[in-house]
Every structure is written in structure tokens, then in C-alpha cells.
Length: 450
Image (tube, rainbow, N blue to C red; front, side, top):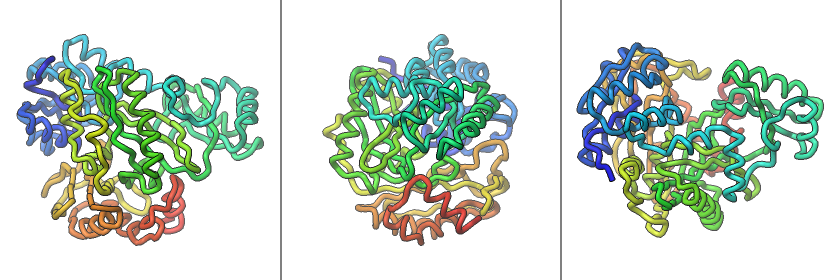
């Protein structure tokens, strides 16, 4: 068992601060890495040490494996926390760290590889007893096979890039007449986006919700679930509003799918935090993918369970067993997170620039995860997420009223943000009642901001 004295955070922004805070509470020193564009960033100021790893472009800095390894060697960091995005699901990076005797705070390279390929992930899920969407057996090589698979599972179908992500290389065929065009478009998009034109097919669910189960394993046979999050409010496959527990999930459904996921994690010998994502329709769960990392929306789970998931990630990476068992995990109240981006409405164009005034909301049950400060210049090179506002209440109505109140206190001046979107959403009866699916927000935006 290795106790870490110093860890390096291979990330930036609010998630880097989140890891620094957990490490500081554990008495562990931290190393921030940064590009030349992030020399004034908050994570650089808050860490014990910092190392510049390259120019502004992410590929030459935060995605540069040699630069991050060098930073570990210069500072003597024994472990790397990847945050989310960047190298967090790069099996090659994990392997190289291991070769340099540096611990990756996350799962093994093998598990990342297994879940990173959509077809292997689905096969693994089936073997572990996780329910899946009806779909093709592996990749679909040509239009003849595509027609046959679609006829077997029934229209509508969705064609997806095997190596996909971020909504690219995905096309829906409503009827047999659409299949040829959808198939060829998905393949060409997949080829240009990922350099791999292999696609697979699944039955297209009409009005599903996006439900994800938070899981945690210690790599020693221990595995638990921390209930589910509902992330159905999405724009272009990007989540904007997340809550836990899911407003449409019954305690029986939670227990059933949670146990399946926890048992799967234990059986895999999985180490660290993970999220098993499902589409949920008519009371049935259908596996779509597993994220082998901490999620952007992890704070809502922390709020309802009172646990620190980053602390737990660090502990199990040190070789310790989980500090809690399934029986210790009871849902307490309701939590909601909104993702605030520096974007100009209504077209969501990135809006970098200087923050002239920043005021964080406070009070009972309010948490703001952000790397902003007065006078900070948001660089144009990275994701436009600038903050996450998280609220916790005894029940969903209390969490919603708390969110409304906290949003009213938040000030971000100097740049345009997506805050007005949330003020508008919190006036919508469907949002207030929790009555929405994964298409709801796109429809609402077309009607209200189109």
C-alpha cells in the first residue's frame, strides 16, 4: 500500500481545483500543470507547485503525455489525477504512467480500453448481466447488413460510430427509405472525426431519459453503487442540467439497476469511480456506455450521500479498500447541478473574455465549483464551461427553489453566459415537474430561442 505525499493534476479549471481541495484535506501536496495561456489560472495559484507544460493548444499541453511525465519526474509526484476530459480515458497514458512507476488515480488501462470501444463495452455489459439496447452484433460492414439488422430490430434505428463521442458519427433512420443515406453519412462522419469508419446499429428509443448510475470499486472485489443521476436535459448530446436521484425512478428500480451495476463492478475488479449510462424508457434500462472516470456532475451524488468521491478515488489508488459499504449509502434529499458556460445565447457561441465582476451565491445547501475570479481572463482555447452551481435540498421542490434563489445571487460580469437559459428553464412547468426526456431541451430551444 502506497501513501501519496504528492500528486499531479493533469487538468485545468474547476476540476483541477476540486482535486486540489480533496488532496489538501488529506494532507497531500499538489502539482498543477498549465499551458502558457493558463499562467494566471486559479488552479495554478492554489496548488503547492506548478509546471508549465506547453503552449495554449490542448494537444501541445494538457494532452502532451511526455510533458506530463516530465512534470511528474521534475516534481517527484507519485500519482496523477486526470480529472475529466483530456487524458482521463486514455489507456495509453495509463500504461506509460505505470511504465514510469507513477500511479494513475483511476481504473486500469485494461478497463479503460474495454469500455472505450463501444462494441467491446456492450459485449462486456451483456456478459455482466447489464441490460442493453437491442442492436447489431458488432460492427455493420455494409448497407446489405445494415438493412438486415434494421429489419430484425425494427425501425427507427440509430447508426453510431464505434469510436464515437460528442454526438459525431450518429444518424437516425426512421424508415427503410432512410437507411442508405443514414448509413453512408454516419460512416463518412466517423471517418473524418475519428479516422475510423466502422459503425454499429441500435434500436432508436423515441422518448428515453438519460439515467446514469454512479459506481465505485476498490479493485479488490469491493463494489458499490451510489444511486443514479438524471441527465436528460441535453443540447447536442451535451448535458446542461443534472439531478440526483432521478425524479422518475422508483426505489425498487433504483435498487434493482444499482445492484446489477455494483455486482458488475465487483466482478470486473474495477478500481475507482465510474458511471454506467443508460437510456430509460417505459420502466426499462438500456446500457449505452460506461465512463471510466469522474463525471462533471459528480457533486450531485456527493450532496445526496455526503461522501467525497475524489478523496475515495485517491484512497483506492493508494491500495485501500472502500471506506463505505452499500449499507452505509442512503439517499438524503435531492440535488441539482447546472453547467454554466461562457457562451452567447441564443446560438451558444463561445464567449471568452475578461470577468470584470464575479460573485458566488451562498447559503444553506449551495455549492459553486468554478475557477473564476475578479479580473480573470477566460482563454479561448478550451471548453467553455466556467462553473457548476450545485444545490441540495430535503426534496426536489426545495432544491428547485434553492436553485432559483442561488441563480439570482450569482454575478458573472464582463462575459456572456448561459445563466439566462436557466432562469427561463426554471419557469417551465415540465422542468418543475421533472417531466422531460432527452429530446425535450432541443425542442424547447427551437421554439424559444430558434
